Image (cartoon, one colour):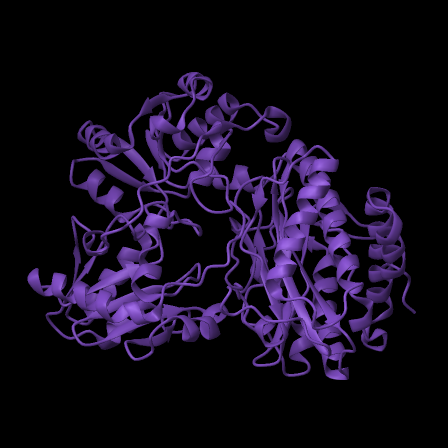
Length: 609
């Protein structure tokens, strides 16, 4: 399931689709409806049949919400998508709101009239979301109405069927821990929370806990389903049996009672009626589950998904797998950059770069007998001004040549069975301007600052985010995205709860993998981002220090374009870090390449200063 280059839905279809939705609402005496970019599992990637927001509006980003009223319609997106949304939606129908600065609850509080009744699908909003929306509606004198049926599903006549990709067992050599031992740990955690059961709604948690992988959504090896874990070890797994081979079914039967997906609601009701104390993650679990428990006599225990931290803190097998995956991936990206430097400007385009990189990754995977399973997200291949669109996704309609004197931003990742990668490199096509080199070096200083950081036990992502921005701030510059996200182990490339951002409130723990990706974007001209993945190392005392501190091990192994670096802007310790990094890149991936690529690599990693 590699990248395709289709465009988003045609914006011109929005008028007809919004009109049909309004007809549906009028027939049921509703004043509006909320359309999130979410499925029942609240994941970043959703199956084609769950792309309701895209179908209605044309917007293809991974985060967004629409509110459709009788005479007005609004779409909410964050800073990453402010340019993209203007290209993909009909601005004659939709007004654009900022998802962060004016989120739907704040908008509802200020804009809904008294007596308004707004429908929502309780399967597509989390407990926390619905709580905030209801409070906002109440302050406006309006009412939020849970619907039994989603109107989009009724008017979307050719809506794709749910996916049925085969489920596979994730080998213990890569998982590092038996599923039965993971489930025992989770059962103990549920008991400590004072619950009898916990509903796992995140397919990443199910994949991790049961040591399985699938292919139900693009680019993330997930098998969609739910699980009810029990403190007494009597677990239930809700998954379509058509996805299970006899071998996989026999394996899973040893771990849980296998149930059809449509039995989930009945089972939750059954448990609730016995007085069960059911743990639900308020930021992941659908509000429908809360209602099923509370309306049938059960007790909701609001606790985080018990698998989220065990999944995020990688064990030694997962760490070794990540290191191996990044060596392999580094060799593939180095081959691509070598090939790119040998081409003449204006002879390549964004799509060619995507397909060539996929081929390089396939080739290296075959050579090392660790095949490329998929890309980990749609590659961001942005030439010139397209690089300034933070989450740009090239299509045949937007495909642009790589032109002399411009920058090219390539943000990509791969899924290998031993690890997930994510890397961004910005390179010069021809001769860069002095401004490009200055801005690139400021971004590089931020990336190096995070890389070199030592921080006390208990430090959160929000506590260190500013280190990536200080050099930019001192020039009156910044970037409108977080500095880093968590990364899974042959799972989601965007994994919580860890992140480096102003909103990153989770403590950074040993074994967590995060991205380190500051950037700078000049609208209409170019974008710059430099991204490595980093691993939180064990806390240890430094010489002369008073307390143990964590650090970061850089996993990504690809040269940083020396042509874009103004060495005069780097402090001595930054230059020392950069040169040492390049020595390591050559040492680790040099043996994996030869000939022209090795010569290119030796030049690309030569010392500066």
